[in-house]
Amino acid sequence: MTDPKWAVATERGRYYRDPAGGPDLISVTNVLSSIAKPALVPWAAGLTADEVIARPIEVARRARTEPTALRKELVGVHRQYTERAQNLGTRVHLRAVSLVLNTPHPYDEEVEPYAVQLAAFYRLWRVDFDRDIEAVETTVMHRRYGYAGTGDVWLWLPTGPYRRRQLWLIDYKTSAKKPVDTVYNEQPLQLAALRHAPEWLLPDDTSEPAPRVHRTALLNLRPRSHRLIEVPSGREQFRAFLGALRTARYLHTAPGSYPTVVPPWAPGATDRKAA
Image 1 (cartoon, rainbow, N blue to C red):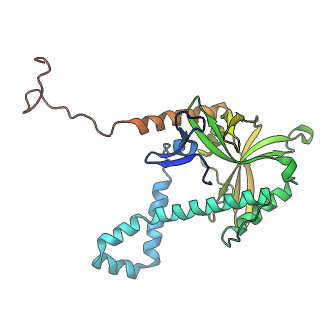
Image 2: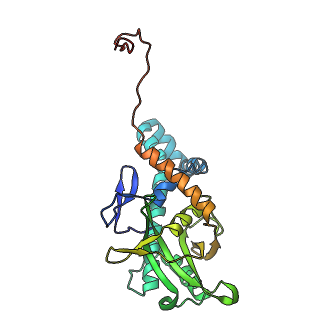
Image 3: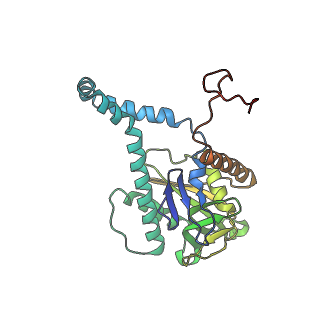
C-alpha cells in the first residue's frame, strides 16, 4: 500500500477526500477492518511468547525491576511487527511502480528480493509495459456507496479463449514468512470493491469511468518465489463487502455512550408520568 494523494488518516481510520468536493469516502481497507479476524489473537500472542523465549533471563530480571515498562513493551510487540510489515509493503509497492514506469529508485536491500520476483513475474508473462499496463496505483471511487480505494495494477494478460487478452486487476501481497499460496477470506472482498467501483481518478484529479475488469488476482511476492492466485470478485463478494461497509459506517457513527436506566424512585430520577 502506498500513500494515495487524496487519502487522509482520521481517528476512524483512513478516508479519502473527494476532489469534486463531495462527502469523504471511507477506504476499502478501513471497511475490511470491521471484519473479525480470529487468527490475529493467537498470532499476536505467539509473537509475545517468542519475545519472552528469545530473552528469558532479561525478561525475568525486568519482571522484578520494571514490570510496568516490560508489560507495555510485550503488549506492543505485535504492533511493532505490523508496522514493520506495513512499511515493507509500502516500499515494495513504490519499487513496483518504479519497475513498471522505468523510473529511478534508490536501492533497498530488504526490498530488492521482492522486486526480483516481481520482475520475474512480468518476464514469465511476457508483459510489455507500454502495451499491457493499463494503470498502476490508481484510486477508484464509488460515490453512491461512499467508498474509495487504490488498486495496484490493471494488467492485460492473454488468458482468454485463443489467448485473447483480458484485463486483470492485481493486488500485490508481500510477506517474508507466509506460504506463497496464502489467501485470506476478506481479500476477495477487497478486490470486489475495487473492481465494482465505477470511476477512477486521473492525474489532474478529474474522474472518468473505470475500465471493465475481466478477472482479479493476488500476486503473492516472497523473497524467493511468487505466485499469481485468481480470487473471485463477483456479485456475491461485492454484496459481502457492502455488508461490511454498512457495519463499518454504523461503528464509525455510533454514540460513545448510552443512558443509564434507573428506577423512577431512585434519587434524582425524573418522573416521566408527571412530566
